[in-house]
Image 1 (tube, protein in one colour):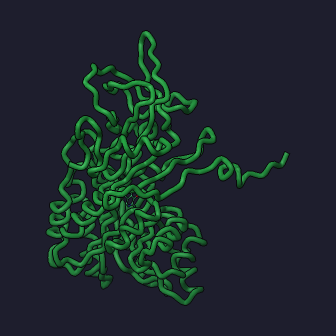
Image 2: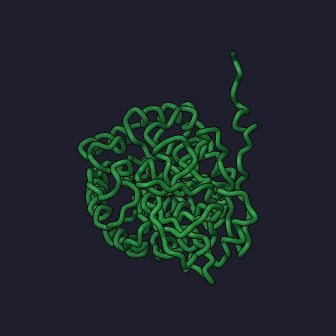
Image 3: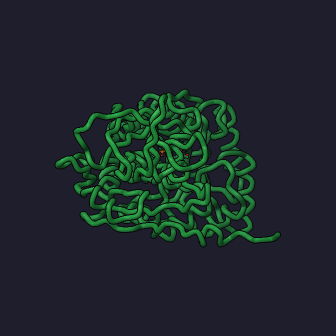
Length: 413
Ligand SMILES: Cc1ncc(COP(=O)(O)O)c(C=O)c1O
């Protein structure tokens, strides 16, 4: 159990959260190195001797310490910007294990990636292919590419985080894919490496992956028959985590079922997990500023707001919110809201809590798409991040100062 109460005090990764919270400025993010390691290892141990590359999806949590931890475990990286490439390199990531995803890579980003000899560009359109080819030729290089196919699969997740349905902006139609590969095979600046798909995020079933893979494998076989053999297949990321106690897909079952479908084809397997590695490894610790009761609703007002944690307003995402000190007094139903001047500023609605002003709360499962979506809205500093490593709490990002927030502004008038 990585989160539990011992003598009514919340413990995370065996560390007393009350002690940690009392001596630090709230709100803050707190991660667990051991949970991240365990999740990474459950993937890496599932491949057996099948050739593979786990490319952690940097967008889920891009703190340098987390990237460096994963790099040391042997992880590759899935990036979506030049900024993420710089982060991975700064953290000590191996460029030959980097895949570059995204529909709108700029020329500058393509140059940066080529100069650093990344493993592969996941190409999203013919325009992008031509741009990469042009730049690679100017540099006398060959860019390794795979095309991201849209498998037109329905997945049961929030509409904003589906990516492989027919109407999404991501991926290339299956009907266009063979001719695109043939065009690419004629280009001097391009070396065809693989094929790629990513069907969305927070996916709680195996079937959409297997259905997609069957479609993609048919394309791989057609390409092989045309004399365009591929070296790898990239099945993206997206495995969900349990936010409300719901069952999740077992990582080793997921990998073994995928490997079964690949069969005896000589295809290395690339995966791009984000949330399923870091999601459950993070807590947001916040303090109750005020409690406000009206005749119709009661509110707990916390010092963490939507600028610190955007997922509830953005995706109507559920995150469990628990007391740091568990008391036996009866619980009341509250909306847990932040101090931002927006009605959408909530962490959770109708939560049963037994709390008073000044108490601490922990928001669970915020390691993925938590801090990375934070902003300075309402001129609020982005908050501290800490990681528990060998039972010690280490700061891995300092809270912004107001001077830093104002630093790049130009007082023109
Ligand atoms: C191309 C790509 N790969 C990987 C991921 C990581 O997804 P997740 O964090 O759900 O594993 C994403 C996120 O949406 C993505 O867009």
